[in-house]
Image 1 (cartoon, rainbow, N blue to C red):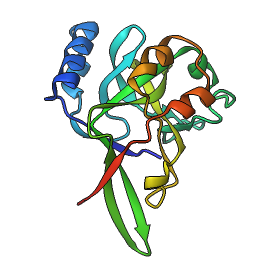
Image 2 (cartoon, one colour):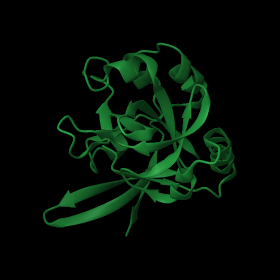
Image 3 (cartoon, rainbow, N blue to C red):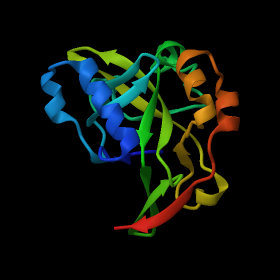
Length: 191
C-alpha cells in the first residue's frame, strides 16, 4: 500500500515536470495548491500522462461519495468497476523520490522511507471527478518485494524506464508490468 510519498520540486527531473504541468494548466488558480515534499491523499501534484505532465489530485472518490480510494491492486484493476475504464484508457506515472510505509510492532509504529535511490515513477490510473476540474489519480500496488515484505505486504508498482512509454500509451498487461516492476529498492527508518 502507499499512503504517503515524497516529491521534491527542487530536483532537476521533477522540477522540469512541474514547469511543464504549469504551462499545460495555464493560469489555473490550482497552481498555488501544488504540493512538494511529503505528499498526502487529496494533495495536488504533477502527474505524467501520455500527453505530458498534468496537475492532478490524489484519490478517487469512494462509492458512497465519502472518503478517498488512493490505491488499486494491479492484479485486479482491469476487472474492478471503479478502475476498469481508467486501466484501459487513462494510465499515468506518479513521480516520487521515495514512498513511506509504517511497520506495526504491537502498539508501536516505525516509519520507513522506501525507494530506488534515484527518482522513480509509480504506475497509476486517473479519471475525471464530478465537480473538480482536475483529474484524480490512484497508485497501483503489488505484492511487496521480498526485501521489504517485513514492513508491509504491498508496495507501489515501480515502472522501469524501459517500460514507461509503453505503460502510458499501449495495452501492456498487468502480468508483464508486474514481472518488469523494479524491485531494486532500499529502505531506511525515519521519524
